[in-house]
Image (tube, rainbow, N blue to C red; front, side):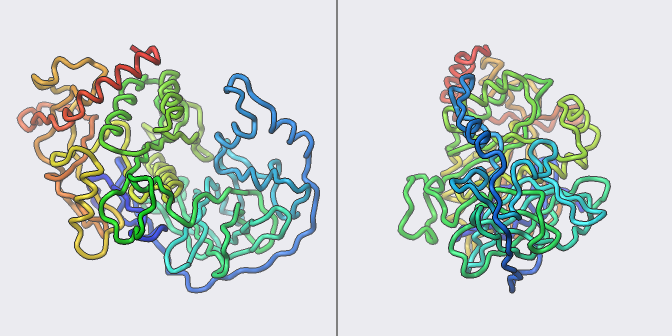
Length: 499
């Protein structure tokens, strides 16, 4: 299969909230396919029974959870743990009642791996590492819970979900209905492969479960417990007016957009100034929020992230790679350079996690790395582009849109207009790009391609060799944000003492 050079603007469903077809989603390093299983026609569920046990260590847990941490602005341990482990259902594990169903895992019976992953053994040849779980309302009332994880198994065996609505009541045990493979690469037992499991909710379930466990047998004991994230209704953050319209299904203009970035691992490189510029370009283009994942990064990058998290424009999720991959920053950096296929497969994990984690907050989510920005020749900002893009669609709305790539080169001298800009305005200074855009080389499926005359993706990464000297042009499109971005970047870098 030939890869294409495009980026996706994901539409999280058309009118109704939920996860629909995510075919042909392009990431910077891989073409992502979600291979959907057959539609769920039946729900296989069992009602479990369990005895009631007291919570272990209740007094100690309550004392520690309520302890304030002076070095974190007197945040409590509970708040800190909730921030660092957003996939852990603390409300279920530390509820007001001092008893729990014997089938419910405790903090200490969960099989933790590499800090954020939870392991379950489905059979002798298949360990499954779970990362997160989400409520998928879908359409026509067929809601389900989706579990995101990885396994070296090419065909994960049948499994069951325990849907937890209360700690002191038995779970509903539901058979896993579909297992979706999340990678453009062929299945290979030599690497951890990403999967998305679907566990349908009973048709009469009015409440969403608080948590979910994956087990080999119905009503069996589980070694994992994930918080179910999401909501049945789209939040007001999806609308630029911050108000729910009378009829969202017919709304064309006024949608907000967010950005899902990559998992940052700039440990050996101080990328802080470029990160500030990238965030401010995203803001200038009209994005409402930026979501990033972070592993081990340079101390200056940590400063930048804390600034924007405190401001509310950026949300950061701590991330680690699953076993057997090491999470030492130097070994990880070598791994990303040498074990490229394994790294590409893992990119699909945090990108999928980001989309599902925030699909109830935003209808439109774009995926850009910090060295990529949309170039909008015909619009002042991304939201105006989005309005016209939606209005141009005839018939059913596609599940997503794709932008083609164009490289902006590191070693091409800036144009006369950009030559006087300070070095910390990297993107605004580097105006030399390839004259032509990458051509489509294979079908896009249900994803709609956007004409590069309307918008394309600028990738600020590559070096121009002698073969491209005569094939470059200077593109000043980003200079429409020059005044706003320059002032903001200089102010942030000065405040953080990074100049």
